[in-house]
Image (cartoon, rainbow, N blue to C red):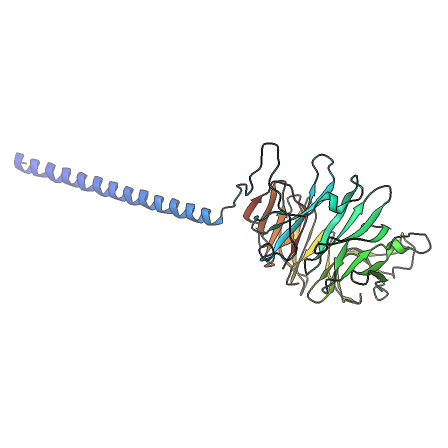
Length: 368
């Protein structure tokens, strides 16, 4: 082969190598560009779904911060739903103040100070404080041992403090939708013959009268806790359904007694509507639209059930804290050591995380 042909072939080979290298570099550049684009997209998605762990409030080195008081009826405070909660005094480890904050973590307000709540500074708040639907009244259970549990109603408009009953029992209470009737468990003045601690009562905050809440139509279900749905006063009760009437077999039960634990729905007159779920959960909450309940254990998992058919909608780990439904009924709020989180009920994924200068406990949703 002539030298001219050899030189020509060498040139062709060099050109081919150059073109191949160029193609490789260009393709690599495309891959790099693609990777950059994908990374940028991932960052954008992550930014959209990110939580907001940064503090919303300035806290001094000694732990103090600017305290603002909740003012009843203030349109700027009550222009959106709020989370109400208890705070534990870090020195005494007792619940002694009530606070509220908007569900986005802004506008933290103190609802009641310990001076407003207690006549005995050694006392503590038991149970979860419940706000009336019109946001004016709060009912709490106060433990001022050795005197026992007292049910107290606070009027946030006038500042009045009324003791409903003394020496009662701490087992929950709830408001009817008229915002003037609070239902509570344990009538006080206990005796072995009267059994008043084991009955339910209505308290009219206008007339200041107590009347028994007739549960004679409920003879099989032992109530361990309850919530009243404000739209129609339907009662959601957790407890156990017995195979024999409640008044038979004594307090400890009887031979061949069968107990089925779960949640039952009752009509306002305590006539049974239906057994919703049967499980061993400890606590529960009802969604604002009344279409779902959440049920579960502190150290295990929580399940979301449909109130139409009792079927499980979703299930996720509890994380040691008790959740409540959000105002849209498809999210939950979960208290944490530093604030609270908003999570999806579909998978428990955190939507955002709020940091507060004080730890919230026993949270409830108000102004919905």
